[in-house]
Figure: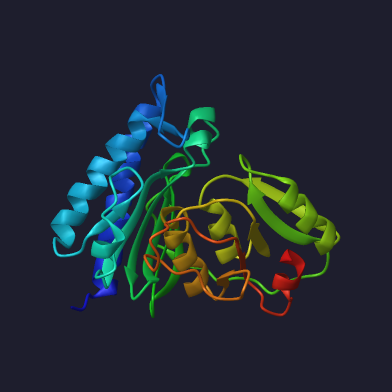
Length: 266
């Protein structure tokens, strides 16, 4: 099985934007919040976006299975046979959505051989898209304009620009910041953290807290195709659907390999 990523990419961008419109329809109304089993928040926007994306992916690639945050996951014995799969977070940054700060995204990634080879991160409230494909490059588009290529940036003089979670900051991030020295912390929600690294607006994104594969796959693809890296604390690229557990190890994303970022994570 092979897939033309250059043909799929604009279709998936359009699908993410369609899901974003469904999210914004809920965003404009009162937001009812329930809790999932893991006590994370769930809104009608999550479910509306999930329905749009599931239908769209069935239309585009009916032969490729989907791994999504908001649907029941197939057992690993079945998933292990999937060489191609979609990894989806229909609303990344639900807490940001509830706070109405605009920092939430739709994440859609196509994974092949445990690595994301296509990634779309759509920010509905910002009307902004970041997207990438293996061998194609990484791009940013605002308000449906023609996408402009993006690249990670060399690390400049101090301070280091560190992007971190707005809703999940903890002692581990503070420890990293102490070790990195003079820095500017840029707090932002959802997969937009990856995107700031990818477009050269931040130097590094350390994540020393829990994430799942649907939180990271699309953003990882954007960073990697923009020239950066996303690796675990052993220096290995994050993988998808390689284990029964769908939680990621701790990781760091960076744009410039001239700094030994991993040594600052330990």
